[in-house]
Image (cartoon, rainbow, N blue to C red; front, side):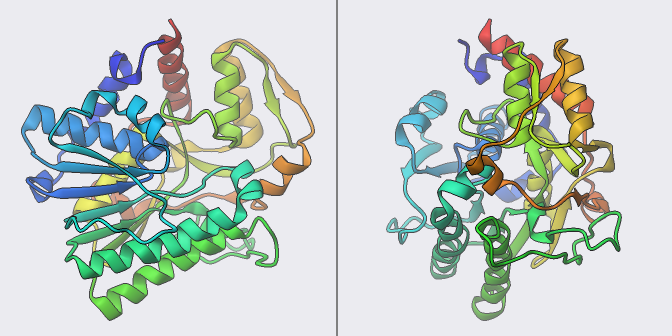
Length: 353
């Protein structure tokens, strides 16, 4: 099986993001810590920054942090001999002991899929609250120039029926007295911590809010509906839908999610939150399943979720984000939902050949 960095289509995405017209000079000769570096977003971001280093001489040192050292050594094998790459094995629930001064901290680490919410609820909350506090404290003590906290569309909760699109000021309903509330409520708390550190410790902080992201960097452990659909498609199997599929959500292809994240990092205003979203990638879950089934020439079948899966499902039935604010920074989505799905499946299938 070929690795992603041997895949021409994937490298096209990486080089496209690394070649965007952004104020990259801010990252020249800097030190960047990326937590959750092995995840869907973090691994693509790491590839893009290392590509920029190799092709533009940016000399930005990447410190990739994660809990799974064996996985990281496999995923980032190409960078291990580079003086511009260091992997740090660390659980964010513990205090960060290194004395390295990071110019930028990009906090991406988080459980982000239903089974993890149901089976690791304490870890989910701890990473988003205790882990974020540990990182913010470290940033304040070591003179970090900018801190980026990757938040989520889930902080908006359930649509109250008074908005078609969620702007950054919207606040919907979350039943906090449930197991499933651990993820969105801890993300809300993470954002509140960021504002507290801005005021009390004068940190420079930006908050991109990611939609349901997908792409060829998805992990085998990811249990989100989109990820399950894609894996079925790559395997040439029928697409399994475990609900009526009336959930109406925003989605973002990983290359567009990372380009949005970099736009916020390098151009966003201190203290502001930005939705990384575009309406051309909004779709109902049942229509998403049909699009993927059509691409792979299979059909959609219905199956009841087991109790663990159901416990981790989002209760939100309509959560579409307004991306107007980030577009004013110059960000544009490159792939709509159909193009992004087709590209993901094509890249993953090429990796099997």
